[in-house]
Image (cartoon, rainbow, N blue to C red):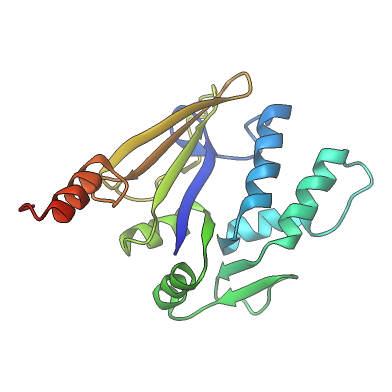
Length: 196
């Protein structure tokens, strides 16, 4: 069963804006490896349009940018939108979003990235996101699109790591998730035949 993960770069005050945050060499290398290891990605329309930048090589790109583009192009993408078309290696999902995403989780193995705060909110409301990764940058934007587009679900911190010189990745799972401390306790009690 695949795991659905929502992760994005974020300012200290909770906003996501790729144009306002510097991605140093270590973080960019992290994103290359992350994208290369994904089973696929689910995008909202706006985030997909931003990422289409990587569809065609550009002469001014570095070797690392070409490497990222190749990894991004090779992975399957599902785009949740009512638009009429999507680019290469992408499937349009315009109806039965919950059924489609549950089906992907059931039949695939590995990690599926969720991209876009509005899409993440919809999938959070449906109980489909398994993990949240906040990549905190040492900037304060004071405005913009928040990482959590709606009420934040109860979460449990399961990991924190430093990436590069100034980015901290915080990894959370839903508080009632199978992998949260409460979820692990419930599984152990169940295995031991104890009341939950």
